[in-house]
Length: 258
Ligand SMILES: CC/C=C\C/C=C\C/C=C\C/C=C\C/C=C\C/C=C\C=C\C(=O)SCCNC(=O)CCNC(=O)[C@H](O)C(C)(C)COP(=O)(O)OP(=O)(O)OC[C@H]1O[C@@H](n2cnc3c(N)ncnc32)[C@H](O)[C@@H]1OP(=O)(O)O
Ligand SMILES: NC(=O)C1=CN([C@@H]2O[C@H](COP(=O)(O)OP(=O)(O)OC[C@H]3O[C@@H](n4cnc5c(N)ncnc54)[C@H](OP(=O)(O)O)[C@@H]3O)[C@@H](O)[C@H]2O)C=CC1
Image (cartoon, rainbow, N blue to C red; front, side):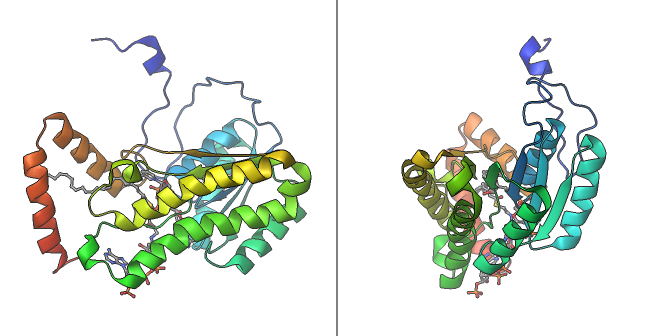
C-alpha cells in the first residue's frame, strides 16, 4: 500500500557514514542559521547525522572524538553537502584537558557555542558475568564521566554567561534492563539523572538540558542489524528463543568477543 504523506517526508535511510543524497526540509532551512554546535563523537553514526542535519539548517559545527583522520574526512564531506564550516578536533571525553583545549579552539575560531550534543559513547555486548571491572568502568568513564566533563567545561567556558542548549544522547536499554548491556544501561541511566540535575541547576543561567533516546535501529551498521533482529524477535514473540539465544551468546562469549 502507498505510504501516508508524512512518511514520504522522512529523510532517506542511509546506513553508512555517507551524507544523504537528497534532503526534504520539514523545518525552515534557516532554523539554526549562524549558530554553532559542538558535537562529541560527531565523526560517525548518529553524531555525524546530527552534524549533517544541523549544517543543512545553517549551523556551523565542531566534531570531536579520538580519531582525527576519521573526523577530518567527515568534516570534508559535511562541508561539501552543506556549505557550512565544520571543525574537526581531537578529544577524549575521559580527559578534561583535551576537552578544555578543544573548547578554547572552538571559541577562538567561531566566537560562540550555542549547542552541545553529548553523543560520544562506548559499547559492546557482554554478559555481566563475563564483564571485567575495567570493562564496566571504561564504559561508565566514556558515557557518564565524559558527558559530565564536557558539559561542565562548556558551562564554565561559555554557557554560564551566554546560555545555551545541551542535548544528551541517551538510549532505551536502561528502561527495562536489556541483557548483555549492564555497563551501557547503567551509564545511560546515570546520564538521564544527570540531565535532570543539570537542567535544574543551570536553567536559571539560560541553559536548557535535555536527553533524547534513539531506538535500537539507528547508528552504526552492527547495532542497526542487531536492533532489527531484536524487533523481529519481539514482534513474533520469539522470547523463548531469545532466552536460549542469550545462553548461547554467553557460552560463545567465552571463546570470542562481539
Ligand atoms: C536470535 C537472536 C535475537 C536477538 C538479538 C540478540 C541479542 C541482542 C542483545 C542485546 C542487544 C542490545 C543492544 C543493541 C541495541 C542497541 C544498542 C544501544 C546502544 C548503542 C550504543 C552504542 O552504539 S555506543 C557506540 C558504540 N561505539 C563504540 O563503542 C565505539 C567506541 N568503542 C571503543 O572505543 C571500545 O569498544 C571501548 C568502548 C572498549 C573503549 O575502548 P578503549 O578505551 O580502548 O578500551 P579497551 O582498553 O579496549 O577496553 C577496556 C576494557 O573493556 C574490555 N572490553 C573491551 N571490549 C570488550 C568486549 N567486546 N567484550 C568484553 N569486554 C570488552 C577490555 O577487555 C578492557 O578490560 P580489561 O579488564 O581487559 O582491561
Ligand atoms: N546505535 C544505536 O542503535 C544506539 C545508539 N545510541 C547512542 O547514540 C550515540 C552514538 O552512537 P552510534 O552512532 O551508534 O555509535 P558510533 O560508534 O558511531 O559513535 C560513537 C562515537 O563516539 C566517539 N567516541 C568513543 N569514545 C570516545 C571518547 N573516549 N572520547 C571521544 N569520543 C569518543 C567515537 O569516535 P572515536 O572512535 O573517533 O573516538 C564515535 O564517533 C551514543 O551515545 C550511543 O550510546 C543509543 C541508542 C541506540
